[in-house]
Length: 296
Image 1: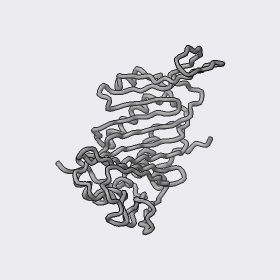
Image 2: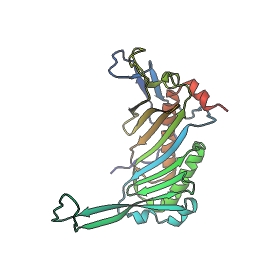
Image 3: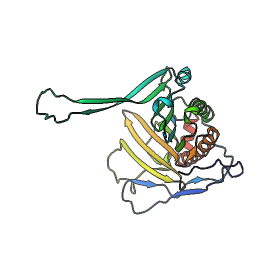
Image 4: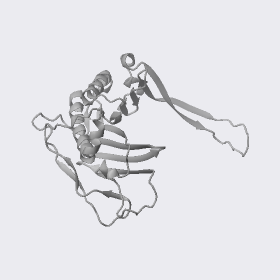
């Protein structure tokens, strides 16, 4: 398996430039209709200034690594258990069981059967006391999760790197097969009569009365290829509960490049994924929604 060498500072940030154009088709086959000429541009700019939101709508921020296990066991991966528990003191084990009933005829009703079971530890979940921060380690997958309130990218990245340091000995020499971030944004919007007041890509109809009854729930997914190694999965969901209008804007950005474990290189990949995530987010929300996020 080939591994990608660490890019130089000269080449980093200029490895790709693409844009996704959603066109407004007059032939409406469903209720999904992007507004005219929405550009989710992945700009080739080293430094991009993003709007600062007083109240970030991030409900969940997630980082995930997928990797080849090689000769390692799950026990090897948590060799730094005592250090991890200094930060996330609560540990849970998940188990996987396989039950077999050889040559046993199971009849309708209550009956006694004899079989064998095989149970093993499938993963470990470390959490903070308040359950807001979590690290999950399973065979081939490491996940770090932060839940609301989101304090910003810099603290999030610092925490990711701190936990990668704790796993660095166990991961030394391993090949990372996928690096990803996922940000689940949740908005509570008082007046949601017209979705395009808040989102540039959403559900709408070709005619005002195309749907004669109020819509209380909808959802759709988009797959956005960025280049041969990177893609994004975007999910949008509206759900009206009582008088509360909840809107979920879920952005998952994934890089399938093969990398030898290196914290600085992973941080560079994450900076790139963040840029893509921000282009998708700020390319889709309107100024009106940004104003709501900045209300005192």
